[in-house]
Each structure stands twice: as C-alpha cells, then as structure tokens.
Length: 289
Length: 171
Image (cartoon, rainbow over all chains, first blue to last red; front, side, top):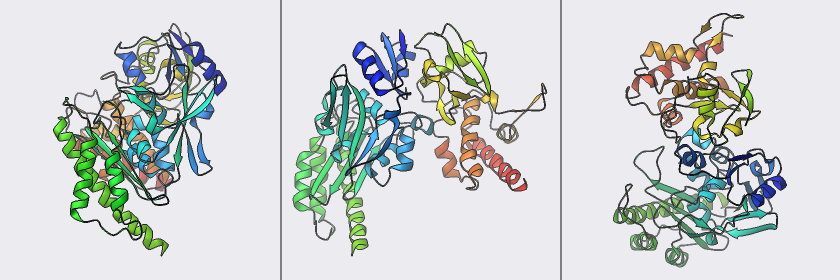
C-alpha cells in the first residue's frame, strides 16, 4: 500500500487519476474503520488533509462554498447562519472527537444512506463540486445519489466542495436514535422552506437504499403553505404532510429499526419539523414587519 | 515508511510504518506510549483520544502518515514535569479523577482525561466559567465507561473545573 501526500489540489487530482483504486482519506472516520477491521486493502491511501483548497469555506456569490474537507465542528461554529439545516445535522454527528475530524466530503464519498449531511443537502438543493484532471463539474445533491452507496462521483474524481444556497426561510433537521450521541440514525429528516421561490425541500435519511426526497410532500406543502403570513396549518394538512413524507420512504427492517417504525418516525419528525418551521417563519415575518 | 512528528513536545520518528496503520498503533507499538488505549478501533469509545494539532481526536481514526509533521499530545503529556529530569506531577484533571473515585478498571480513563482537559481549556481556560452538567455530558459523549455509571466522572470534572478556575483567578 502506498501513502500519497499531495499538498495542492492539482497534485491531489493527479494522484487520484493515477490511482483509480486508491482511497482518498480526510478525517478518516469511515476509511480507518475499514482498514482497522481488515475490510479494505486499497493500493494507495491519498491523504487529502494537506490540500488547502479543501479546508476553506466562505461566501461565493449567493452561495456558501464549503470545502469538502471542512470538519463538522467548523460548520457548527461558523455556518449556523448560512447553512442552518446542515449545521443542525452536524451537531448530531457522533461525538466531539469525531466532529473534529469528520467532513461532509467524507459523508458524500462514503454515501451511507444514514449519513447526517445528506438530508440537509437534498432539502436545500445544494450542489456538489467534483473535480478531476479533466476539469470540474457541479452536480445537484438531488442527482448525486444513484443507488446503495453509489453516487455520480467518477473514479478519477475528488469531491472538492459543496455549494450551499443562501437560506431564504426556515430550515430544520431531526434524527431518531437510541441516544443523543454516537448513534447512526434510525431515520432522519430535513425540511427547508425557500420563501423567495415558494419552494419546499425535503430530505430523508436511513429509510431507503439512498438518501431521498419526498417530492409529493414537497408539492403538497408548496400548495398548502401560507407564504404570505405563515399562518399555522390545519391539523389534517399537517397530518397529510407527515403521511406523504412517510410514503416516500423505502425502508427495510434491520438491527436499528423496523421499516414500519421508520415510516412512523418519519411522519412524526416531518410534522414536528413543519411546526418548528411555521414558528420560525412567523418570527422571521415579525422581524421584517 | 518513516513518519516524523511531535509527541508531548518532543520530536519523534517511527520507522517501518505500514501505510494503513493508525496513529494509535504507532503511539503504542512503535513509540512506547501505551497510555492511549485500544478498545473499539472505530471511534465509538474514545479511549484513544489524543490532541492532534490542538483538537481532540480518536487516534485510531488517524492514519499514521497523516501525523507527519503534526503535533500530538497524549495522556502521557498531561502530567507536568517538575524541573529537569524530575518526577512528573499529576495534572489537575488527573488529581481530580483520583480523588473523586472516577477510576474503576481504568481502561477509559486516559481518553476521559484528555477530553476533560480539552473541555476545561475551552470553558474555564477561555474565561467562560466552569461547565454545567449538560455541557460536561455533551463533551464526554464520545467516551464510553462501562464501570462507573459516569456519576463519579462528572464529579471529577466539576472538581477539576473548580480548581482550575480558582488557580486561574489567583494568578
């Protein structure tokens, strides 16, 4: 096994191109588990921790550009305002030690359906920047997850950044687990209201082979939500929204929970996220008035 | 491969390192620093917690080569050196763990000591006052202890925080 230490993005892309069966490593919180347990013996580890471009973040037009190697702790400390749903999801990741190392880029590279980053990226219509020696392209999170642990990432590409749209309304994240820390989600849900375009975004985690959206629920809420005043929604509307989110899930029974429980939990989380959003929306309107 | 970095203020070099091994393995098996414990090897238990460039991390999840040129502080580095070549004195956090009875089998203790030290640096040390119970539980959520039930550990953190605050205001 080779250990490659590129110190610029160009070097990293060349290393990736030269070692298609190599494994990029950043925080190591997924990759090292596989190495420690003899589950993987790649020909090379491509250490990305010395590539400065990957750990930068900041405003980029009407987006926040988040380097793929920025740890969750930084997102929590600095991006709560510009990426509320992702910051909320980041707070629920594992433990302080893991949040100091783990990154959204790693979450996307591993593409576990339980990854905390995915529902907020889907709900907020984030874009993912992929680079190779051939060039750079952007893929919407909504087009990134293809099948179980398979994504649009090509074998010579690295995930370099995530483009997070400026929030234009309430964003929520909720997750179910057996305790408050150190748990892989039984299921998770994110909701984002785009008040400028009157669009609703959803993201569902750990309830299907890939992270997924509840598109029927989005369309339903776009029609029912009071975009003028954010008046509380009628009980049947809230219930219907929860049911539509649960209906979009394609969960299985496993050691963390049954399919039936996951659907139930999703409907409850969806209703809660909606009521939190209505509260936030009204607070936001009050400030503007 | 060869890996050189700084541990507890000293420059060290490990040779014959397999590129896939962890920093934890290098510390324990190549550098004679067995304080950091190897329990789960998947970041779940926190018993291998070290400072890595100033922030705490599970050393089992850091590839050896990623430590090249970096600064590591292990549980062995918490105790203060008393004079040149003198004995080491326990740190305030270590003293508090002993006094509060926060140690039973001791396997989780090194990780808890490092993580507690970090909590106190970021609270008392940053002028924010002593951490409350909820903050302590959050900070230590990634450190598993199967003996104590955590109550004595939390007592120890309070004890150390109080003393560090006192020492800080006195200086």
